[in-house]
Amino acid sequence: MTQTHNPEAAKVFAFTNCLCALFGVSDRDEATLIGTAVPIEVAGNRFLLTAAHVLDNNSLSALYVQIEGELSALLATEACKTPLPPSGSREDDKVDVACIRLDEPFRNSLARVMFVDPKLIDVNHIARTDHRYTFMGYPSSKNRFMLKKRPLRLTAWSYTSRSALTQDYGQLGISTATHICVPFDKERVLDESNQVITAPDMYGMSGGPVWFHSTDGLFKLAAIGTDHKRRSCKVLIGTGIAVFAAALAKQWPNLKDSLPPIRNAKINVECVSVP
Image (tube, rainbow, N blue to C red; front, top):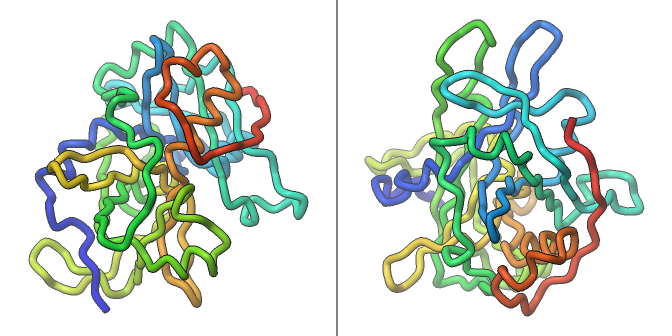
């Protein structure tokens, strides 16, 4: 079975400004793209939504973002993420949610980034097999830099497919009410010319948006990409935006009235610092 990574390229890449690349920096001044984040604004507060396993990298390196073609350390007042499961392994975290609240002086520095308005999210979306979804992000294999190389030019990648079958969700221990899951065979992807290609490695794509192609022709933010299964069940998985909204409301209760009503998500989060 072949799948297409971008059948509606012009429409999809109009949302590239809704992406924010997250970097770590090695002792040799080599910048490594470790994940993607989705900027969102709620009641005048600006956040980056990403996967918890991406934010975990903060224990190894300060996090950096691109500003005017150069890397700048991410300044955040506070953040929250799902705690590690009892196994102690993030791989067993089926939710994998992180929200970073941007520091007041820093948040306006991301001038070229479009912060998603809550009106553009489909907070209570239920995945269905007749729905189409586009996963977007910055694969690390297409974005390698040295800090002395200016400016940084990022290459985004997207993949579009219909939802996996309902029974596949059950086998993975997730729900159509809280996740979006699509078939993804890395070795058999169709490009815009209907040629079979090998997709880039998905490392770096985590934390990117998952757009729902609604019947009215609009794109709605329905999830954040959090996992790539490679073995028996080859799929991409996104955690529903409702779960992220629930995390925002739990960590910052004053935002609850500014978020759409949430029906299907409960979550535990822990507050963490982002030095």
